[in-house]
Length: 297
DNA sequence: CTCCAGGCGTTCC
DNA sequence: GGAACGCATGGA
Image (tube, rainbow, N blue to C red):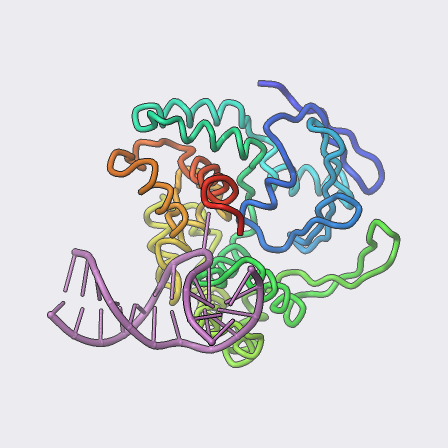
């Protein structure tokens, strides 16, 4: 495994020696809703109550603007899965797919989205985000999450690359959303999801569901716990486990992934045989279907 | 205008 | 147990 080199300057971290990493693909594969490409050619957004801007000037180099050394080591390194060996992960996935994949679809998918990393996002934000995502489209999901944050998230000031001071909003806490109430959440055009978001917020705020405790449960028990929340089914729970709790073995199946499975693996693919990186494999397939075989959206 | 979106809960057989 | 249907809204 090639190892990365980390250097720190005031307000930024520079990582070199990267492979299997493409910041555009990371934030364009449908796992995260608060980051967007900026005019300067980077990708900026908010997570962990901080505004951050990522830039990849060369294939092996990542610059994280707005990151102290401490934040890099505690937050961003883990968030971006820079501590994982994706070369080895891809090899493992290829091996596990071999018995099922005569056409080599997974290899084509790993070629196409080879720079994807499955992020390790904040569990509560991930839970809300994927509740919002149900029967919804990407632009609108992002819009609703931005609206929730601006209305009920904690405000903080920060500076953009251009040097202007702006006010940013963290993702709202469960307490803030529970206190706001279902009607207020509905007023933000969340539609039928308002009652689901509110139910999640209430349960977490009241301690009925302890996400830190859920994080320690075996996967199937963790899923069952999450599915006590109204509006959380197997798909939302799977996404929370994969993108929020780093359970890379969890394989969320949605309409697009189901389409891939039916198309390329009509009856032979056994998801349970795909091993501990099945969820990462799923993300490669999702991205591949979206941009290559299934057209763009 | 119509169709549909990284689903889920309910209802019906 | 599992197939249909409604759901709020707005993007395409």
